[in-house]
Image (cartoon, rainbow, N blue to C red; front, side, top):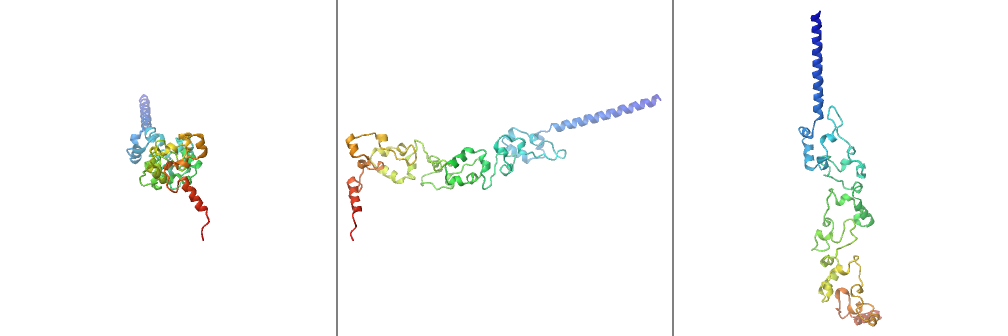
Length: 287
């Protein structure tokens, strides 16, 4: 009887030992699963890690494979996460169809656009659309992707627009024009007159042929407050003549001609010649 009991106890202890080792093996297996890292993923998935290494941006530096892909088939079937799982809190992240622009989540900033994309751009680029809407031009009617067909690309103006002159290059365009408000012409105090000559050739040629001091003055020195503004001579010269002379000749051009061709009179542009020409024009024509 004692022998039977001894054998029975031995069998029970053996069974308990087997179950104990099996439990330890399962625990060890679960522990191995929990310690998977991105370096393990590359053993089977070569393209995604390569994309992340090349252009992963924050997906490379701030997250791991396991932060997005929780679990692995067959244990977990749905391992492709929604972008909103991490990206939230900004209007841009509320847009639907993320993959229409961000076609590869492993290269999130390699963005591809369709032909007429505007609304998604506005969630980030609000200053640009405000300029376009407040300052109407042909640019206002275009979709953002018409010019920016690749995200972050700033196209050359000469891609669509012919330069004002043969001498002008792309860098010159932005000295006067802003792409999102092109008709609001602004320029710096050091803008060279040669650029102005691209559009205002007649005035520039007269000025360059003049012997007066105005020839050495930049166009923007006089036309500084607003494009196409015509300053008063008194803004620089004050009242250089006695009051009696100023009263008799209230307009400076009556004696000095135009500012670009100062003190130069041809026979038909003198005050006397102009008056004589006016009389001829008013006289009845002979039949």
